[in-house]
Length: 174
Length: 425
Image 1 (cartoon, rainbow over the protein chains, first blue to last red):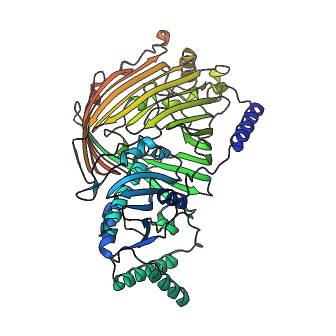
Image 2 (image 1 turned 90 degrees about the vertical axis):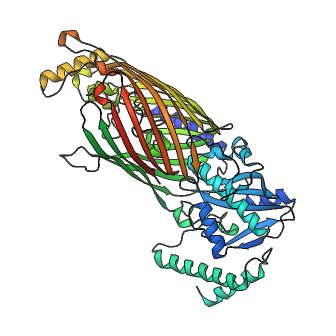
């Protein structure tokens, strides 16, 4: 095909206009505060899990790298706890909320996704796999999580965060 | 850290009541001291002003080492590479090669605007007398309006096939990339251009755009289909452009998709005057699927392409040979198709270790525009069937050891045993 600058410019302008009309903040699917409030009905006061050296070592074994923050904020009542965690997929952090009820994951939501590929991890068809998951020996999940082609590292990050949320919940309830 | 700040931090720390009090006061002091030491180390090592972190992280005491991510508005380094050893059955020869080492710089300018780049070094040494090549594999800017609408511009990968966009060694089976996505789809296929892409519905990803195209005057190896006519963003003749479109549907364990790319490649004879006024339209399309269930990993792909005016391109190579005898005349490819099916089974998974034997069957068929008058005929090796039996052993999701045996039905000189090591980061 031959290059027709005027037509291409007009098409590009049209596309930009159409996209601009639907401009939204594309990365934040739900504010973390809103997620916590949704789980508890209102936002309770946060609690703090202090990561002693032992806990740091165990968290590092789950994540594959040392945790940078040494105090983990969370919210809980007698049965459930909520953990807002972040982990890098390929190169940008994914922020996800995990609700743990009686030592099992109740539900998961991707709250902020920043990478240009791999957004499929935020869809229910993927997140449903974590429902009722608990920790197996070795702090692994008790099930296989099916991956998504082209989003392997984002899937891995979600799995690590799920394990960490369960581990933190178990630790906080000791 | 100023003393007043330290005091405030200590006061705040002890004011926040730990839920179950599992850390003693001494342990808390140690943790705070560790945080202070980390902050001091960061302050010492950071020459640039501190970047503002994402507002969603620190409030929630992220586990993340933020210096390693792009969320701080910085630059990230990514990369991959592979080493291969091949022992050829017929000749007994063997080669070992650092096939490629790729590094890239990805940068976030702001919340919406990012740069993605990859620089590839092939075969370890790049010089006039060596086989190695240095090339820019990708260099494109993405502007994200939202998940559904992204604009990209620059040198980017064409979204055809499975491997072209996702080609890091730990993501595919076998030491060598499969032949269909090498000789039919010329992985790693990139063009200069602009596109719109995004994800709509639940897992439907589209990608459409306009790009530079091949220059059929540059064809010099019909055994690799259209590959040798690529321009790769190097002073590309852009009289003729191409358009492409791709749709892929992904859900856990499943990928189904396809794409098409079409445009003229004659470039009005910019590289060979014999092709002036020749359209030489090239069209390629593919469909592919991947399904993973209970440790079984299945792949299938079919790709086909046509190159119009192939007889004129053949004639142009003859003309070029008459002007310069060092230029070899050949029968240009007029159509090309290929398919493969592959099955792998994850037999062992423990921690990061993951072992998966696999088997693959491929078929490649490239038809050439023969010119009997000039003794230019079809190369029999362009009709090939390849069986591969091998195993991938992931030491880590990003590091893999590979071994395989390949048998070629036509070109027996390619029968081989391969060993490989691949990584990405």
